[in-house]
Image (cartoon, rainbow, N blue to C red):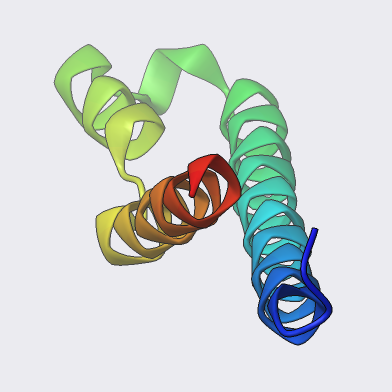
Length: 78
């Protein structure tokens, strides 16, 4: 590997790790939300509302993480 590529690879690796951390945070938040929803009394919960809450995901953050991963993989294959 050329020494000129090392800083670029290091930067890409750092971005990739940050993206993975963001993705992990999102998944942990969703897990926590799912646990909170599960604790609600079922007699007062409408199934349609429950399904909507369970599928609510921060798509922008997820898409950013995917884009960062794709960028990292593109840089890695060069």
